[in-house]
Length: 63
Image (tube, rainbow, N blue to C red):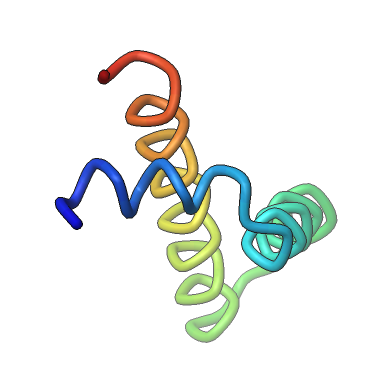
């Protein structure tokens, strides 16, 4: 399998969708918090969201 195929399967994976929802909730609920580990988890949450956007791109726009 090529990379676009793997990313397109990620867009419909139930576990990744659950992780995505948790990442979005983390960003929404902790937007005012400060600290090193909070900042690292915010970067990780943004990374999860960007990966899902890439997966949606490969799912719907690349054939």
